Image 1 (spheres, rainbow, N blue to C red):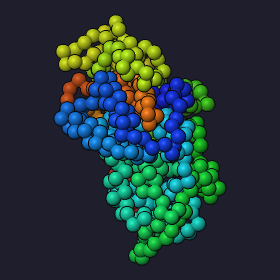
Image 2 (image 1 turned 90 degrees about the vertical axis):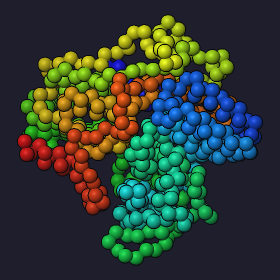
Image 3 (image 1 turned 135 degrees about the horizontal axis):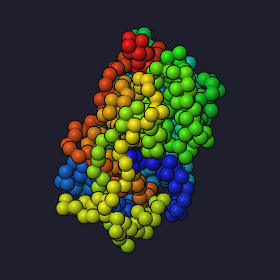
Length: 494
């Protein structure tokens, strides 16, 4: 199968190497410094980004360049510069072009991300409304399901509308962007924790909340004190018990009954796993076959993607007939990186800088590979799982998991159940990256290098499941997994 997918693990691995020294967090960036940074960013995008005009025309992109440039004509703090560059990259509508949370320098992370300015609760969004999930403040009234109406006198709808402009996503599919604004408190970074305190900082070291408890008419105000992300996680574990703290915790397999297995894969970032993931899958499918299990539910909800090899392994395990993954054009904008931009670019493979002899130039100005770079067909496997497969999906599925969904749906290998995915049928950019380090602000920006675009025109949206299940608020509040329950009902009817 072709290398469709951005390998997130490489970003994480590379984030500690090859960086320029960081600026002091208190340093003021001058217009000349900022405009020089932007000139470099603009040049890199125009010369190397394959999807700059994928979702909007050149005149629109030119206006985006001009608007961002105008904002850099005064002295700015690092946080102000980070916000401007983040909003600009988000406006390009590429889900893999952003000021990476993971790849910034340690001092930038400490200055911008790791402060004691986080809300002391986690929440889920429903219909662009914010509801408490876990509360670790001293205010007992913030029970699960309590709606946050305002924070520091700003309506939540206004907050969401503001933050979504800074969140990466492919095209005009906002489902992934909204999904990324949920706050779980897990992992190293989340978009809400990054952008909310920068845009709406605490006032007098406090967040004033206007709230409404579920099934109660009264609206009241309370104050809570901000905490750090690490402090919040520790308090969550103290109050709510052990939480998933490693990527291993996101993989599980069990038999729900004598006829149905359940495989949860919460990440494809395999290089950060301590388990042998291939052996894990081997054991799971061996058990399914040994016990003659008739149905398999694979749950990839919440999983953006990672290593595309997981798709190959899963595909082979399910290939009771040949699987043909959708064909894509693989397009690049360059053959060799110029000396002008080379000092500002890092990556994990030096061959990305010079592709001489590997490409052919197309009439539309793009390049593509001389040789086919992979196999988009998985041959029939006589030892594949022979039962019925159900794939549970949601808006998080936007990279490798997006393509897994597309391949299994196209070949009718699995019944897709859940909600519309993230990602975009018009294509995505990724596979290989440059890490662009702006010389003055020292902000890092991920630049994808390969465009993966469908052979025929597709709509600007995610993948619709075969069976769409809409959640209502009571389902979420009751902690019912309606998607899983409906899938089991579907199985029982067969």
